Image (cartoon, rainbow, N blue to C red; front, side, top):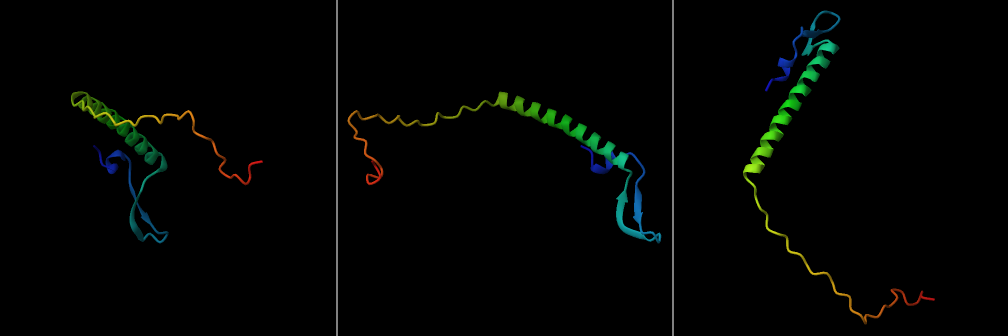
Length: 93
């Protein structure tokens, strides 16, 4: 995999103050060159993502793991003679 600097195939300038004095050592590149470098990096990322997903699928197919079945609870049975009472008997009209 490339380092971020390897995607830049352009001149890199050092930032300077209007007096000509070197500012903090900050490299500066042209906008178009930066956009081109980002596009190349994203294209490589897609390629690596594809290769990684393919490897994961192959590995999953080779090592199929069977998980135990989850325990299930029986559904509650409805009692035929359960009386229905209002929650608030004072409000029932």
